[in-house]
Image (cartoon, rainbow, N blue to C red; front, side):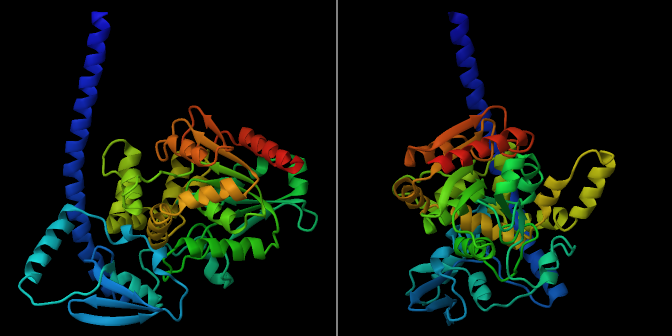
Length: 460
């Protein structure tokens, strides 16, 4: 008994020591990253001006004051005010997550302290009660300038040659005699190949002959348009899917299969088309209930990006979410040069490993990834409760949730959180599978599970 108690105490002590060490190392590392991102801000301004003859404002600038009057935004910046009219865009301010321009850091807090101290010596009056970054104003001016740091290959820019203002959709199945339609929505920094290279070849002959399978590249990813003037808000994503899939293929009723970030888009579409959804299948939905009194967007950002070096996935998410310029550097190195990385991978593995996941991971721009991460994952935090309640009360379709037991990106608790809002939802935890291998590596089994879901919905 004493040995067992001593073992438990030792485990607790080691766990506490590990947590303290993680916190200490994380504090140092992220202080350094704060400073690096601060320096990169100026570096990119110089390079952008040198290559593009102008630079765009970034979100690490100090927050600006705003108030909304009708269709106008009053922007005040150091005693100078400008009116921005929302006449040429349907963008609404509530579409924009405040995590884009409000990400506290040591350097930001220090600079804000210095600025506030200097402002005390000035006799200025600020009447605004909201904040907005000048980047938003720049976008509203519709000033489109291609970024030098984005990839210029045919795959990433195939949408420019087609001149179509619609998303890329991979459609398989009968064109005219399809009895059922299925919409597949991929997750963050992915593309439609996540479905087409895994599930599509493994569906039965019956499904391929009676179902129309529609896998879409969401706005800014894969072969879909990547406009530099877009803020990639929820409204933009949903409207583009409606235009490119539901309207273009004349879809009346359909099943939805969505992964990770795609689950949020799936819920938004289901709420807009409650009578059209035949079944809803969600894989690793990123749903974190927000405690009362907590700012929803900031709470979610800290849950998915906790500024910790361990576990590794938390560190990666923190870098992607907190650092605009470091994440741009990663995109510059990885995404712009994805053809080189694919070649190296094929050379090392002697072409024995398919690189579709690498292609899917790299085929996006920093602008698309940065805004989608903040405006979809963080920005919709205050809406997800109402979306789930609508699915629970107004949709009669079957809701099934799959989650990898070893998922370190989105914890399993998120799926159970969804089930608490939708009691009829079935949660299936697949042991020894993570965020990607919930599909990749078990595509045959998952294809059969989807077929069973669709068959049951047909009988209901």
